[in-house]
Each structure stands twice: as C-alpha cells, then as structure tokens.
Length: 513
Image (spheres, one colour):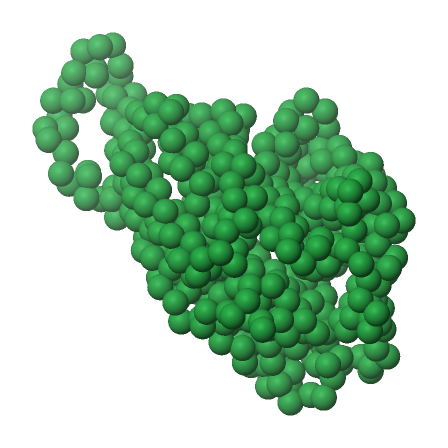
C-alpha cells in the first residue's frame, strides 16, 4: 500500500545497552519538543502581541497557524514515510522544525511569524507518529511496551509543561526564547537518530502524489481548525464567517473521504478503519483525550480568572498530573499481554472519570492540596488509558500499515483535543451565564447585603460591584463544575467503547497474531 511504510525484508536487530538508551532518549525528546510547542505559546500571546505591536486577538493566530499546519501534516505521515523512508523523513522533519523555530524567534512582524509557525507545524507534525513507530522498532519485541511507555510519557506531560515553561520564559527572558530553546534539542535529536537508526530505514515506494486528496485534506482540516480556534470570538454560528468555514469543511471532508477510499494511491490510508479494534481504540482515545484536554484547559482558566491564582501558581497545581503519569507508564506497559488489555484500559479511563467527580466538589475558596489531589490521582490513570489504547490500536492492524495507523491516531487525538477545548470554553461561558441568572434571582435579601457593605465604608456603586463580582465568581465556578461532571460522563462512554474492540490474540504493537 502506498500510504504505509514497508519494512526491509531483512529486519534489523533491535538496539541494546547504551545505544538503545541514547536512541530512545533522542526519539522521546523529539516527540516532547514538538508536542510542547503546541501549548508553549499559549500564555505568551500577550508578550508576543506587545512585542510585535498587534492586538492579543491577532496574536492568537500564532497558536492557530501552528495547530492548523500540525493537523494537516500528521495524517500525511504514512505516505511521507513510504515515499521518502521513515528515518530519512524523521531527520528532514526535525531539521526543518529547528530551522523554522529559529526563524520564528527572529521574526519581527506578525505575518512573518505566522508564516514560520505554519512551516514549523508542517515540519513537526509527522514527528509524533514517526517517533512512536521508531521507538517500537528499536526495542526488542518483548520490551516494545517500554518504548511505548516512553512515548506516552512525553506525549502526556509535554502539553501540561508547555504553558508553565512558556510563562517562565516570557516573564523572565523574552518571548523569542520559547522558540530558541528548541535549537539544542533539535541538534541532539537529529544527531542521535541520524547516527544510530540508519539500519531501521524503510523501503521507499515511488508512488504518484495524490494531489486532489492532498488539496481536499488541506482545505477540510484547515477550515475546521480555523473554525474551532476563532468560533468563540465570532459567536459561533451567529457569524457568517464561521458558517462559511463549517460548510467548506463539511463539503471538502466528504469529498476527501470518498476520494481517498476510491483512489489507488491515497495520500491518507483511510482503509485502516476496516480493522474494528483500531476503529474503536481510536474512538475511545479521541473521546478520552477530548475530555482530558478540556479539563487541562478549563482548570487554569478558572483558577486564574475566578480563584485569583497567578500563572505560575496554576502551573504548579496542574503539573501534578505529570508526576504519576511518568512513574506509572512503565507499569502500564509491563502489564500489556499479561491480562486482557481492555480491562486495564477501561479501569484507567474509569479512574479518570472518578477524578472528574472529585473536581466537581471544588469551590472558589478551595485550598492548594484540595486542588492538587485530583490532579495527582488523575495522573495515575493516564498511562493505562494512553499506553493501553495505543497498544490496542496498533495491535489491531498489520505491521505494513502501522505508520499510517499511528499517523491517523495522532491526528484524531490532536483534533479531539482542539474540539474538546472549543466546546468546553464555549459551554463554560453559557453555563456561567445560566448559573448567574439563577443565582441573581435566588439571592437572599440583597438589599441588606448592600447596606452592610455600605456601612463598612463602601459607596453604593462599590457595594454593587462587590456583590456582582461575588455572584459572577460563583456562577463561573458552578459552570466549570458542571463541565467536570460532563467530562466524567464522556470518560465512561470511552471506557464502554473499548469493549467493542475484539481482544487481540497477541498485543505486539504491530500485527495481531
């Protein structure tokens, strides 16, 4: 198949010892820095906007441009790997990512920065699935779970650490350094992979370029991602601009699916969805990641806007997610093949649903450890959800379509995070508005409260402002708690979806035997 990387007939021997450690570190680091760049600029937008003399709304295109380019390039991974070779394209991607990171840092106009962010996203997108596939290949078969655990650790912790690192760099240095810090990492990864993974290169297949499929992919994904990123500020479907983007995305996506399923050499191999295990594992990870990422986005927003935490204080609460996610990833990988993998996956997802219920007990006066505790617990469930579903999905497809499958899975996971974020932030606004009207009508004797505040020395206008902010804060808190419970329901649905996938006879991260 043209859209999958085909392995050499003479399968290379897995790496061992120091060479394995160095190669695994280089691949994991490459994945980490690419995922990190999807969120590191989020908290730096005000700094970037100020430095380039543009509005914060215009500055948001620095995030949108990267997200769109990344989303477009990830599903192309299978075709690119088969056309140019897995290792070769990895090195091209990491070097391109480094060059455009440098150009982002030296950009002095918004147009130039957006252009370089697009090229950075196009270069970096394939690195996620390629690092995953190469990690699985360099480890001995019996230790493939360890490679998957390393990849999962970097994929889950990077988006959490991104805003923390971005905030620290922007506050203490200057915004270009959020791009310059990529350069030594890129050099290390390119050298490590180039010097040690040459034997793992895959056979190149000279297939024609599916131009129509590529154009339809760019148009559909681009329109949909821009719709998600700009919908909230344009009042969603109350805006002709958003309606137009939705129509373009829907029509071009339908045409893309039909074309790719009927073309002899598709640029994205959608036929991997014929494997039931892959389809339901991808559905479960998309639902679960959307719910998880919506919480990762909403919690800092609520803590900073309502509770009054600084960006750094918020970062140190959310960072607890990564603690057990890192420590338990080897455990999640170690039990693969020893029990029915669907049991450990659904247990991990239901554990995350339970932590969502714990979050729903928060209030605006909550203490540090009450906030940190659900994050610590949620980190325990993440590896079983993430490592397990990735293993189930890749075990459900033959080895020769594994790269295509990994690319599609990464694409849908990333897209579900964007959808979850868009829905959650909009739903929070709506839920807060409803809660505010309910609270305002249910206030007990507001006149007495105003009189009490005025007796304390406030003017009538100041007293009304205090009462209004109090109601506003409580309404926003109720709104976010309702969304935590909704995320818990989505986790439960994801756990159920896992059981529609057949149990693989052998979880080998490649073909199911």
